[in-house]
Length: 90
Image (cartoon, rainbow, N blue to C red; front, side, top):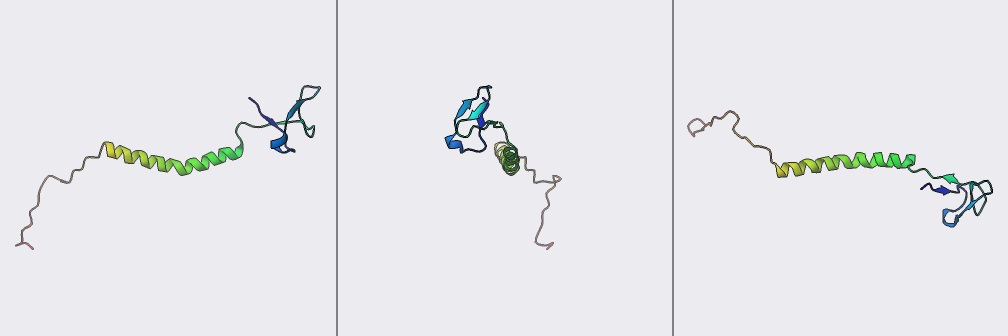
């Protein structure tokens, strides 16, 4: 559905009429109505800004949940040998 609006009148009080040529005109001032774009440039900029702030947060939560479900293997013995320290060597 294509929406039209009058750029000069208050949107609260606008109503549409059809001229004798078939064009939509404002019922208050008689000017031609303008198509309202589906997505405006400022909406695109706001979406990019919001995603740049939210994506790292979502990315972090995904890895936290992944590590909670499947914890990484913790291998504390580096080369398999155990070193015993006695009091005599200190």
